[in-house]
Amino acid sequence: MTKVLSVGGSIIAPDHPDTNFLSGFVAMATEWLAGDDSRRLILVAGGGAPARIYQQAYSDAAEQAGADSAADAADWIGIMATRLNAQLLKALFGPLCQNDVVCDPTEDVDFSGRILVAAGWKPGFSTDNDAVLLAEKYGAKTVVNLSNIEKVYTDDPRKNPDARPIDAISWQDFRKMVGDDWTPGKNTPFDPIASKKAEACGLSVVCASGKDIGNIRNILDGKEFIGTKIG
Image 1 (cartoon, rainbow, N blue to C red):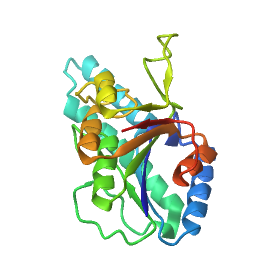
Image 2: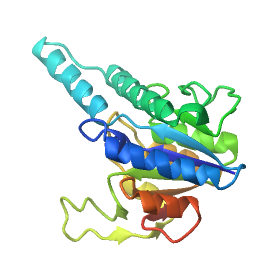
Image 3: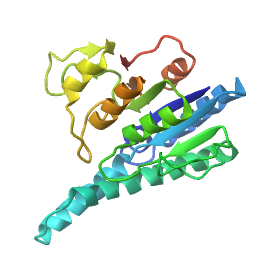
Image 4: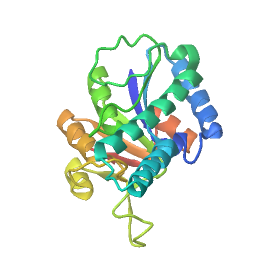
């Protein structure tokens, strides 16, 4: 039984690596794996503060130099940040994670441990998309998308006080909300390109807060949880 968790960079490193979250998450995941030898986890790390800070530095420095910043270059900077966070996760799980960090979700990997950690792949694709590709490859039915939001809303609640939380939504309706295009750093509950792929693969996505360790455990255990199910 393989579960895929897309662990947002806003959870791993909101402004710097969150050691309280990381220690609690590692303890919970280790305990969950110990409950059944057939259980495995695939963790896909986002970029967080390192991605945001370095992408902004690139944009600012390019502007000061009188040059145009390029989307591909910005994407590569974000990808490298995801790989740094992924390496941190791999190190924290020690012998449970025997494989190198996966940077290409399409490559053949002998998943030899209990945990596989993945990171960004190439420009034009977010880590959400990597999570969907890995879920398809390893037979997972659901991708759990952990971020700094508890649920998907009908609109941005920071801008629209009438925005309402959503418990469940179809792919058709969700994709109307997020559109079809991906740009580096785009702020959506789940990447539009990944959403299209997930719908085509028949996958479900659960969007939930990454800070609530007990709620993550409930999702893994198939119990009631706080979040939004897409699919």
